Image (cartoon, rainbow, N blue to C red; front, side, top):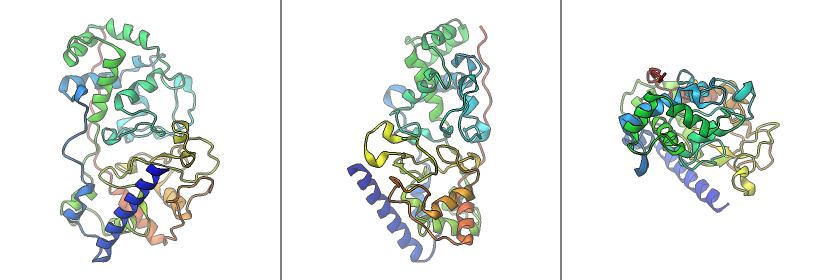
Length: 339
């Protein structure tokens, strides 16, 4: 409760400052909004610094279906680079074509997130990387069997030695390589970014008006703040017919019942459907949900309140969110070892 209160006060302060700027003369592209630009450095742990060898190895592993027990599912199956690093489905499909309970989150900009998964159960990308591989409902792979499979291939033995000299092929080095590759998956420059840098026509007038709604009447910045447009917090948004405990399954704090991690809005135009359970097909539907102040009021986040937005304000808000989507970086599939 204490942590939630602190985050809420910080978010309100951010909103207050933003609204002061808007009230003083409208939203303008200026260095005032430089906090919304991507930091120069990608966060990375000291014990797993990004190198070319580690990135290339991680990329091979990411797109290799041998990481699954069936040898049919790779990380890239659900985290498709052409679909905003998600899968375009309401909820994920796992081992044996089983339908899972939660949507596949994008892995874009996960390097900047302190906690991973919708419920934040993983504290590092290394921990996150191994989770789906071993999960029976997802990739259903036995780690010892995977290590045997990879070790039988000279291409992988050499790649692991180049990336992690003397460490061999282990669960730890597999996790580290995957995490390294994931850290390099970052958003490209969007129309909004160019506008902030001073290109006054990079973002449409409608999108600029939407940014003003985002900072003010829409209250979006309470949770979607900073470069990655997330507070990295957990909130119950009042979705209908949703009994998923969310963050409460990890931390038994009442306010976290039904609360899920605030997702990034970067490349949001590519990651439909939306919400942790894929409840909404379009951004327009998402805006309508927030405008209603949510549907289920049980344990609802205090940030969820009716907004009374006009049709024009809603359309502008959607235009702004679409302006957070950049041109996807090209991804060339790796050549996987066969011997």
